[in-house]
Length: 374
Image (cartoon, rainbow, N blue to C red; front, side, top):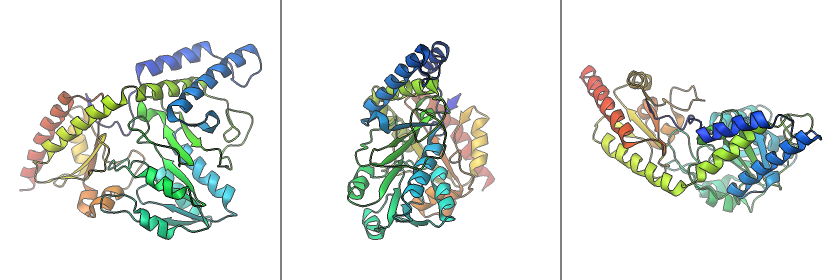
């Protein structure tokens, strides 16, 4: 099997799974219980939270555990909107956000919030001068993802945050596609979302980083938990596994980035020889994601043809149902590219043998499609 869909989800690291299993068996109590077993569980929970805070350079009490990034995005956006709506209802975002952000904002627009889109350049980068122009005194929130899940374009988050720190607006960053893959300075970010299954953790656990200067209206009300902002029994095995996955993800990260960059360049160089292949990712894309379009073939046709050879890619974000890839259209301004795009997402686990096998089968499919369109 050649798996090239790591941006959708990653396989669980065996060490992470072992941590989950051990915690499940050995720490059976609710970490909020006052008896000895509960105290034991609480100490492990605090240790895991400290590890995460130390890796990300945030405070322990700024970490809110969630079921994943979609919940974290909803929690941050709705929580800030409802809490600060007396100060304004203007929210700025991009047309390149994940559906858990864009659909949340559409929901808020029906409740009287004004959603405005900042302009992006030909590479899909936010035009900061335009952001400076459209921000207002009643702007309460700016939502910009760190990395687009379709094209891999990485926004200049640090530069945007530097500007926003002197405004009244909070800055929310969907960091799902960057945490565990590349470094990100969170100094001027107010809220940040992430999911463990994107960096070899277990599905069903993620977090929201909420800086101390931010207050939220909770999505889930109830009793005591790890934080007052999200009620529910702490999922200790998942929390411990998340900490382990994050630690392993950042171990030897520079070497991992270097390997993935070489794989990406090798893949791009080989694909550029095909006249009907378009490379949609650009120089600002992280090396883990390569978006291409095969103009003579529908994305689903290419996906299934590769699947017959035990190769797995994506025709778009697993959370998107739109046939026209809006992110690709935004950076290429070419509808056919957007209609025919597929995403190849690689990992430090990917080998050159994997890429060569993919290229060999891709070549067969390409030639077959060319004959059909002669």
